[in-house]
Image 1 (cartoon, rainbow, N blue to C red):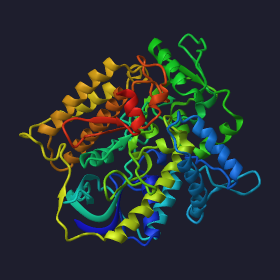
Image 2 (cartoon, rainbow, N blue to C red):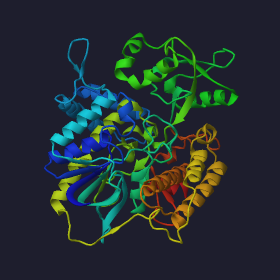
Image 3 (tube, helix red, strand yellow):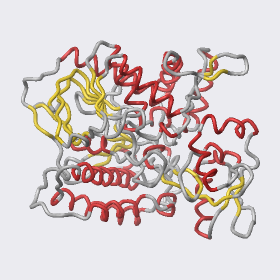
Image 4 (cartoon, one colour):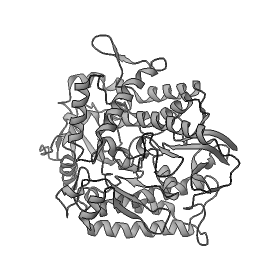
Length: 526
């Protein structure tokens, strides 16, 4: 299959859908390709997203921005935060004809909280009615580039037709989500960092990759959503209550739980959950209730064993560096939205939390769609120009191809990035050792990796997870302090001179590089 279009969107979650709708509203011909089914892909479909929602009152909005900025460890941008609030407020109600919003106590539509499955179904329907062409089960494998290095489209493999495809486009938006390293996090199996890999191979810069330490508490047998745990009490196997800081204390909460898990099983008691939550949880997050009912456990009455599931850059903050007001990246013709892009602009060194992150997915989709459409209109599709494929890892081995144990590499990546003791108590020694092991895995893929048919998709997913792990490790090693969700056991202080975003790149070369965004910080560490 060979297609020409104005804007190509890669991804199938809420950011991808909003990007496609936005570009189509600007008059662009838009194609969406997703490795799954647009409307069920990613972590949104299993949840109940709440959006950062502040009325258009100057005082209220200024206050909301200041409160959030105060928690960002100095790395957020107040201008971006204000834009996110405003665009979310203007945009979400536009879905009213496609989504049945709940009502508040006054009988008015309640816009910020939505049910994930119905929300994504509404976005798919709106995209189709806007003229967007959707290709489900069409994973993208690599980007295509012009001679001048700008992005010309993408190529991939259709799962059901078992054939390669190529789409040329005037602009490309990556909305492939973050990377949870196949931790078992609900809805994240396809979040393997594919967009990070493709962008890295064309030389893109990333920002905030050290802020990837995020975990969600769930029943020990399956990952669910974390909403019920805001008022949880925790107990050890003897029934002794554990001294666990509040959920919102972030790293302190995770460290206390991690120490408890190291000593033995941990059990949650949700008796103290808000009364209102007990009555509405089934309605807003049905996927959270079902696993308990299948085991005959009453979630708000019985104690049950819990576990932490790694969320990587899904709830962590790092991603492609944003260089312009329409979510441009450092590569001409390439845009990023949702968890594929860094959320430092609104969350700084923290995760941001669900409401802020959902607002970011919506708004970055709207902005990137508009920017990509305008670029495509200005430069055209450039369909007659010479292009070349940019993918290397597991596609075009630099040596003689031979079989590689991809599952073993996935396990190696997981062993380095997911264990709590490694992530929450980082040290230079451990990070350096991790870097060596990940570089060895990366070289194995680069030199020998090759696959055929559907195996290509799996091989690229392995390469993508390895590449994201390398970026996160390099950034964590370079930031020699503790800040936000980046916690170093050997650098416990927050250093004022390091109040700057940290960039990392070099996936397209032999060695990764890191540098701070501001010259003053670079001089401070020189």
